[in-house]
Length: 405
Image (cartoon, rainbow, N blue to C red; front, side, top):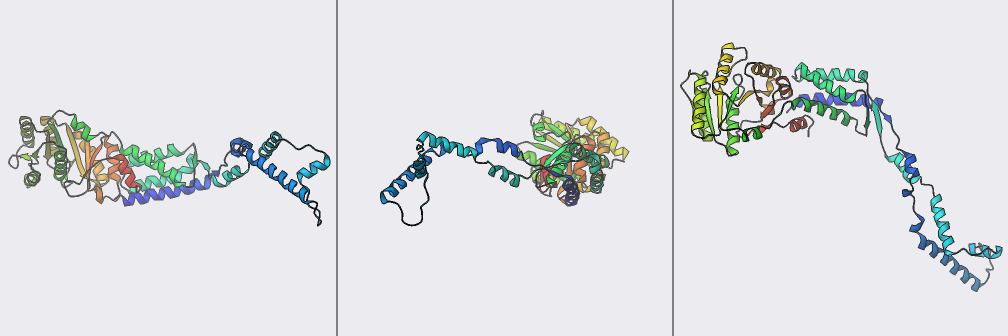
């Protein structure tokens, strides 16, 4: 999933990381602050008993030597106590010994920790200006366009990356790619998060029955998406009735009927060629009379260029007053899906989108672009053929997929 887009984002990350590496300058740690702090030097109070014991051992050794007598061999080295005896110097007391030890420890140069800090702390910083980013961002825009992102979306992402990186000093560690990846993630997340809302919270607090109309072109998975959403609502404890509003295409009523039978829900239908607005109106009235929570209405697939069918869709929405109009299209359609979503949004308008076949989408352009272009959220992804294969859209999850997380 999204393999081509992942590759292109990875190439941009490598290219800009190289630029950062070339411009990054090393920053040394604040060694003076480390050297001036006394908390790193051993305190004399930690060793007072050891200092006194050492002096007592020295005294005992000298007394033993005096009882034994002078050595006949080479002259033994003079001890501090013997030296003091010759010069008449007075033996220092315990307090003087401790004071001398304190003075000694204070004079120990505190270079160990500071030197380690110089060796171990790896820190660099980089300042990027517009000129540094010009070529990498141009390549990023081209890569995004090749991944079926709309031009305005590609420009918005590149501009966001530029605003995050240009004109400010960035502190970096060993992984220079992290700074680029963070900027890319934020830019894409801002785009795909456009006007998001929580479908489950919305329908939970909505007055029942909740009427949802599904629109889109032929063959994009509208009917299958209705069945998947029906299963999801049934699993949540809701009741559902289906409306066979696609009276235009031969076999559409039977196709929806098969799903209704498998899922165990009621389907309202008229004969082929009937007015779809009338079918959907009857389904809403049935739901009200039988206290059904949801009405999911199928409609005929139509191209956005078919003015008659687009006018018919406007009539359906006018007569039945849906709570949500959901546009369904294939993620693999790329920019075509984005254009169709924009056209449907102008005609109805739509409240959100479901993108099918997301698991087969190598580019990811439609998933990123549709929410930005229409200003309406992506609600669900179709990720397979089973009734359970409907994933609620999560921007964080989506961006994570682009960076293999």
